[in-house]
Amino acid sequence: MPIKILIVGAGAVGAFYASRLALVPSTQVSVICRSNYTVVHANGFSISSPKYGSYTFTPHHTFANPRQAIDSKIKWDYIVVSTKALPDVSDDSEILEGLVGDGTSIVLVQNGLGVEEPYLKRFPSAIILSAVTIVSAAQTEPGIIKHNRWTRISVGPYLPGSTSWAAIESNKRFVQLLQAGEIEDAEEYSHSKLQMVRWHKIAINASMNPSAVLSNGTTNNAMVLDPELYIHLKAVMDEVLSTAPKVLGTPLPKEFATSEAILASTQKNTSGSKPSMLLDWENGKRMELEVILGNPIRIAREKGLEMPRLQTLYALLRKAQENRDQAKSQSHL
Ligand SMILES: NC(=O)c1ccc[n+]([C@@H]2O[C@H](COP(=O)([O-])OP(=O)(O)OC[C@H]3O[C@@H](n4cnc5c(N)ncnc54)[C@H](OP(=O)(O)O)[C@@H]3O)[C@@H](O)[C@H]2O)c1
Image (cartoon, rainbow, N blue to C red; front, side):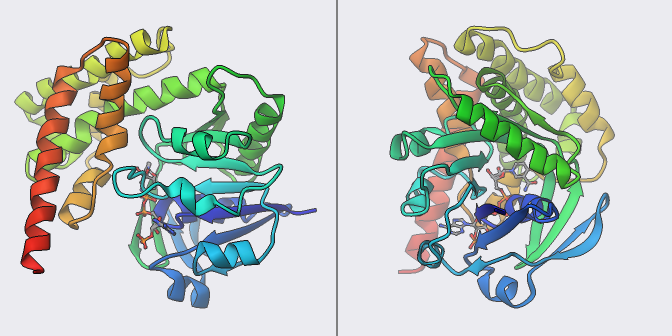
């Protein structure tokens, strides 16, 4: 029986990993599209990558909406969710109603903290796998995916306060599929270590992303080369990296990069890449503020811990977004 995989959120990250999973002979990879449906239905995805070259990925099924996927009556082994995580806009776990059956594993490939909770609440008996990727990719036009660099994806079962061999097995199998699709640095993690990876990535995202927006569009490289911004970024990273062990109850592994190492590597990366939050801001889209800033602040606060630098960035940017959206809706009146 082929392993049936459904991608919900077939944008940059979703389509890129889908295209690698589809190369594995034992898989059938389908997608639910939204604004890119017409193009993808007609031509599939065109992927270009410095590592894998240029190729076309034609999904097994291209669905225009979740209803079509439900009507197909396919029993999905894996449903990969790679929408932007915007809990303040929509609860995307709702999209999976009618698609999750016995034996379906939900794989969340999204930035931020707390992204698993809505899925656990809605599907308490489903297997949930949590994934963090440092890939750099963009959908430059509908159906056109540009993979820029990196492929690393860390995947762990989401098992807060519980154990499940089925989840651990499913996690192992999913990582093996990614590796078979030539994602050599796909790595299997335990629940607790994956949450450490999420916190570590927050140190990068919660410092770089809001600062790029608040400094009026500065790239990562330009920010770390600016002496005052360097001090600011390092302090935000250190705030997160020193809070994470207190929240998680365990030190972060020694092999995780320090703030100095992250900043040194960003100094060397002269590609001029902009963080996704800046791209979203520039395109008038909602930013992943709640999962990258709001949830870490709230999770720490529940343990009696404050992260004042993060809180400042969050408060300012949330208001900036609110003002922008209000101005936009008034101009449409
Ligand atoms: N891009 C990167 O390099 C990168 C790197 C690391 C982590 N991440 C994380 O990965 C996640 C995905 O990011 P991304 O860059 O791939 O975003 P993206 O390119 O915007 O892709 C998201 C896709 O989800 C679709 N979508 C949203 N809601 C949907 C719905 N209700 N039904 C069907 N499709 C829906 C969007 O469709 P529309 O186009 O119609 O809105 C879009 O195609 C985010 O959490 C991001 O932070 C991204």
